[in-house]
View 1 (cartoon, rainbow, N blue to C red):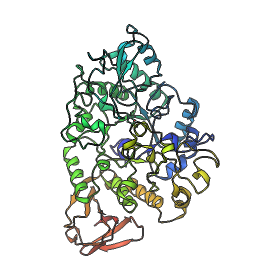
View 2 (cartoon, rainbow, N blue to C red):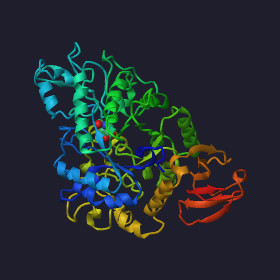
View 3 (tube, helix red, strand yellow):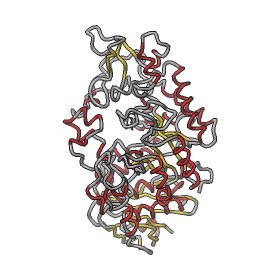
Length: 535
Ligand code: NOJ
């Protein structure tokens, strides 16, 4: 399949939230040896790359996105030797491993920040963004944190504020000082030399801020809900200088063989596309989160897919995502009945799909009782916890029906509660059922892997005359595949005779229909998706 295509173009990327995948040492938190035990399972999903959310030492104020040491593994997750064994196991199965890299901020316990905050004349003072108080003693400007409250915290000892757009234990590095990028490149080298295949780069579009630290204007379109959305982030995000930083990171990757980076970027297409780099010398993939953010409606989804295809720069490789550790689970957002349709969409669109652990089972958000809520935005803003809280999509993987779902030994207190439905929705049960969500996912991912049209073919949307149906073809050489997705619960009859007289069903979401069907009178039942081979 890979003729002229790189591994990160043809393969499914599977995101693991390490705390929640597999606990091997009975502390209620997942770890690297646990993930290693599950490599055969991962291989059975036909995923080609695994992305691990951060595994570095961290005081866990943002569950690892506050890194205290970029060159080690948190003891909760294991050791560097455990990491090497995991990497070896991944590579032995022909898969790739991508690590999370968090360059925008460190933990306040990182030695760089400890030095920086120790005095105003410390040589690392300028590695972070320090400012004098405003004349009234308050923060230097009006910037806000994504997690609620101001983006500045006063350091009493030295009398200045430091910047943090997340929790106050995540001070932001100052990339206007070139020494900082040199240091970060060294941290990347450490893992590249160990053999990791790439990085998912955290908030890459925020890495550099306005030099003058100007106030941000109010956003007239503010929905009145999340405080961070009240301002237009024209000085904290997507600054022109960010591209030079990314080019430096890319140049490092290019000095190695076959490595990649995917950047976390929440921006509209026009700005998003600039992150490929004018000479394709920035990120390999700028994450495309539109399927997460859009209403689940066939016409809206068709419009955004078509527009994305138009907006992609020639030579830019597309990618799609349905969920991650920051977003409500897809099965909850679109409803259980649509979960298969959503996955069929993800795995049949043109471009690299990223799948969030558990979505292959149809795992849903788990309601978290108030005493278990741990995620900082939910803790800091209890009144909107149900919107901004991310614990519900981070609960333990559901392996089997035993107590603790096979995630942890029976009797162990797991770091987040398990879903109530784990006795039914789990890998063991679904592996036995020929038409389970898991069986469907495996069939779908195998179909994608084995079909050049699905993995690298051209995309073209099709008019069906029915507004609830999103239909498109994928074509490569003489292989033509038609995808029909019914976003509604009602049955529709379609006349697609202009595409041929008969087509062969390759897979349907219900996994019941097989054989040939007539395109003149094609029935698609509610919540059904069908992949067909056209003559
Ligand atoms: C984006 C990550 O995905 C999120 O989980 C984290 O809280 C912030 N960046 C801060 O690192």
